Image (tube, rainbow, N blue to C red; front, side, top):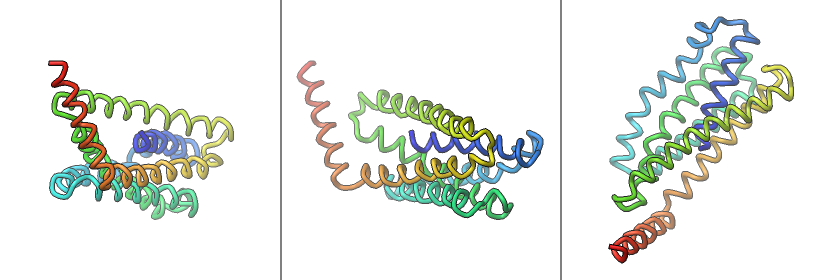
Length: 198
């Protein structure tokens, strides 16, 4: 949810900022954000390969670090005032968002018995939608409170950085040895309960 909240907030604040503050057309604003989308397109399949060969931990940690760095760069260093910093922030966000999808799905589905994999995937998909909605709602509230996208830029970016930090922390907690043992015990209990019912 945090990764998709960051995405929803990122797209919302940047669309407003690029069009309302910088005065770009919708087309030019979209072109400005193209580096984020392009990097996401390239990194996502790489993340899947890393998850397949080394597990979900590394991509989740890299996703959290990159999203956190993107938010801190924009909020703490005024990236919106400099095109090179702005594009660097966009690229970092694209790396983070591209890295997060494969390990999230893998982690959700692999902790459940095969019969419950569809439920886990459905919950993950719903979490994505809820996260995106929350990101837009929270960032929209920040903008509504301040009245101007440029004034809301720093708080909005700190929220995005916080979402990146949450991805980093939750990724670390859910992919460690303790989490693996917990998932195995839970899967065994669910499989045992299904056997008893049959």
